[in-house]
Each structure stands twice: as C-alpha cells, then as structure tokens.
Image 1 (cartoon, one colour):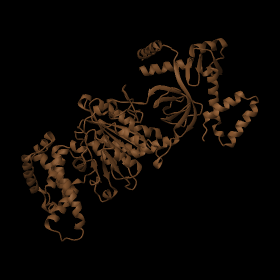
Image 2: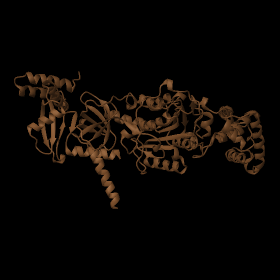
Image 3: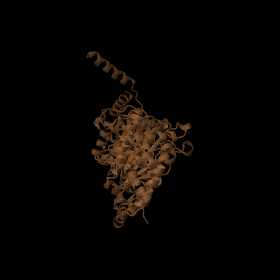
Image 4: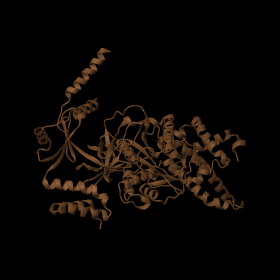
Length: 507
Length: 130
C-alpha cells in the first residue's frame, strides 16, 4: 500500500508546512492545595468564574471560587494525579458541552464525552453549560400536552410541553419507572428525550439504556450519565450539561423532554463541593445557594413563543424523600420551584397499586390548559368518582347497611381505582385512555368484577381497533368527541360485552 | 478580631523593612504567630510578602526554563520579547526535555518558546484540524 502511505505522508507534510509559529501568551497558575476534587491555585489572575482550565496532566477543571490571590478550581475528572506545584493553564473558554443531533442515541458523560464505545461524537456545535433562562418576552404559556402514557397522570395530573413537574417519593416507589414510561411514550410524538442520571448506580443506568434500546427509544433519546463512582464535580455538572443539550433543540423550534434523576443526589454533590470550598453551610449543611442551584436549572425549561421558534423544554425532576418526608429542605425547595408534583407512596406501592401515584396529593398547576378536550371531559368524572369513593370507603368498612346509591358509588370507585393500575413499560396512547376512562367512568363496566376491569378494558381496545377504529382515530385527530361518538361507543361496548365470557368477568 | 494573612503580610513587610535588627524582629513576629496558633498561615504570608515586594520594587519574578544554559544577552532578549522590559528577578532552570528554546514564566503568565512546546502546539493543530 505504497500509494496510500505516500498520501498520508504528503498530508502530514502539508499540515506541518501549514503550521505557523507565533509567540503566544498563556495564562497560568500553580497548584498550592489539593483536597477531594477541589484544587486551590495561585496565579490565573484574570480567569473568569466557570472558565475551563487544564492541569499539566491534561485533566480538566473549572474555576468556581475567585478570591484575592487564590482561585478555587473544581477538578472534572481524576484528581488523584494532581500534585502541589503543578502548573495549570487557562483554556480561555467558559464551561461548555457539545450539542446537536449527533448526540441523539448516545450515552455521554457530564462533559459530553461518549461513554457507550460507539466512537467520537461528530458535532462542532457547543452550548455553555450555564445559561440564563429564557426571559418573559420570549415565553408563551404552556398549552400543548406532553402525554406520559400513564392513565392517572394524563387524566388527573396533566403535563404540558414546557412545564416542570416534580416526581417525588421514597426509594423503590417507581419514580424512575414513571420517567422511563414517559420516554417510551414519546415515540412518534416529535420529542427529543434527555435522561440525566445523577449519582445512580452504573448497573441501573446500563439496564435502563438496554431497556430504551430494546423499545427503540434510543432513536430519540440522549443519556447523560454521571454515576456515583464519578467525582462529585461531574455529578454536579451533569444536569446543566443535559439542560444545555436540551436547549439546543428548544432553540431550534423542537420539543425536548429532560429528566433529572435525581436532584437530591445533585444537591448532595453540590454540598460536598461547597463544604470543601469552605462556603458557609446552612440548613442540613447545604450551602445557602442550594435553592438557586435548582431554581436556575429548572427555570431553563420553557415554552417559547412563535417569534422565538416555538420550541419547548419540559423538565421532570425527580426527588427522593426519606420516610415520605416532603418537608425536608431539598423536597420543599424543589416543590416550590416546579409547576406541580407527582407524589409516589410506599404504602400504595406495597398494596399493589402501581404506578403508586397518590392522586390526592399530586397536582399539576399549569397542565390543565394543555390537556386535550376529550380527556378533560372524561377526567372530571374520574376525579369526582374517586373523590366520592375515598370519602365513602371509610363507611363501607363498618358494615353492609348501606343504601343502594352509596353502594353503587363505592363499587364504581373500586373499578375506577383498578383502571388506574398499569404495568410498567406499557404506556397507553391518549385516545385509548379516553375510551377506557369514559367506559368505566360512566358505569358501563359496573356489572363486571373489579378484577376483570383491566383485562376487559384492554380487550375492549382490541375490539374497537378491529370493529370500530374510527372511534380512536377521531380522538387522535380532533382531540374531542361529540354525542354521535358517544352513541357509537356505547353501542360498540354493548356489542363487546356480548363477547365476554360471563363466568370469568361478570359479577 | 480575625487577622488575615494579607494583613499580616502587609505589617510584617513594613516592620522588616524599617527594623534595624531584622533577625530579632523576625523572631518576635514568628513567636507571636506561634503563640496565637496561626503558624499555618506562614506559607501564605511569605507568598504575599513576595508579592508586596515585587509590587514595591517593580521587579517581576520570572522563571526561565531552557534546555541548555543561556547567556545574559539571550535572557535579556527573551525578556524584551515577552514582558517588554528587562526589569526582572530571573531564576533559571535547566530541563533537557524542552529540546531547545526556552519557556518564560511569571506568576500568572507563560510564553512557551521551546521546541517541545512548539511541537505540542503543532500536534494539537494537526489533530484538531483533521
């Protein structure tokens, strides 16, 4: 292969000939103190806050503290090789990450370097990690739905594009499951998903990526992973990196969904860094700016108006509580920042009610205006039915001396509650949810046993898909239904019930 | 009242400059630091005194690292090229890895004129342009 050798040599010679020497001034400093991931250095007199620096051994750092004569640098990588007296040079750029379409389908670290062994990421575009959130004049109120595919959320705690909805609950209550189901349901919804794993186990992230891959969800997903084995600095930066990647899509008029899993560990990583930087600790030893840490991050989720491209970034932060204590410092902070919360409960989870969403405590402050009309119509019934059921349920435990209408309401409530149970990785399209909630909510399934509600509802969808697909198509297209639609549905349900095996389903 | 290293440095510099018996004065200052339990500030105080002295005398502290020993004329030329003046307190270091040329470094600036540095810059340019 003499020819190709020659051309490579020729190429190199040309490149070397192109090289011009110049006397370049570099800004440098010297390490004076090294502690867990934080370096104090002298010199670097004119560096700016959040500027990137490089140590002699090519490890990167970012300037956090600027004091007279001393700068505090957070090491973004392995800090064990850094020694006192080592030279540091400024890279003359504010902390940034690569962004763009090339990242879709990839697993990257907090600095945008690939972690999945699929080769280099070919994008020349970068965005600063820290950016001021879009201002008032560039925004529009949330008005388009972001369907999670989870019946209880889409019906009662609707989320709109550009909203920030907190997912909160103890460990092992299915917080990540809700997030993953939401990603799975975005297939074909014109949404780019970004999953940011902060302080998670490598094992869990690997499983999750496999799951997304198997479901074909990696075609529109970016995973930013800073696991618990990585330095606190990367755990701290990961959500900002994810937000910068999401903002690229939002700025280009697209819709993005970002999941921060989870912000409690982010706050812990920031506490670690702040304490070593000797910033004064406050409540629960978190530094004073831990509120601003999360508020500036979540403010970056927005729905832009048409003049600014009309893109959006929806944020689903996750917070892990200890023993259901939502009045701890970080949970209260994030609850007050977000536009509502989805509250998951251990008790419900253990009862087998999954997803273990406590619909009584969960709210969505802005999502209502983003809900499609058809869903709005049926969810009113559902909410009322469940509320009445919860009130009457206490009575029902005392005895069976109840009047007919109370008994009926309790029975209806049981069926509605059963309908909201949903298996993992099985998100439902919104039109199917509308049909199922309409049928159960209006008492068409009152004569079925409680246990039969879910199989019957699923069978009904299959029946409709075969016999009357226009029912689903209408909701998907018009987002609304009318009297004629209701009549067709009622007659279809009657036909469907004739096909049911009476011995199994009917009460 | 909490006294910072900068405040110590400022007063020490004045005391040591004006005192006739520097050794005795220094002993007293060190004793005071020891008694007040602030000996850990000493490295910082020394560093700051160095800075104050530099500022007062207008001399820049420069380290010139080269592969071979350099003549005074070359050092002066290097200083003129980089700092723009030759008013400097120069320390020289020999590092054969530089191959040739020299590296001029002050407290927070550096000019890499060594063969090693230029080769590195060329490597980066070839890699990044690719």
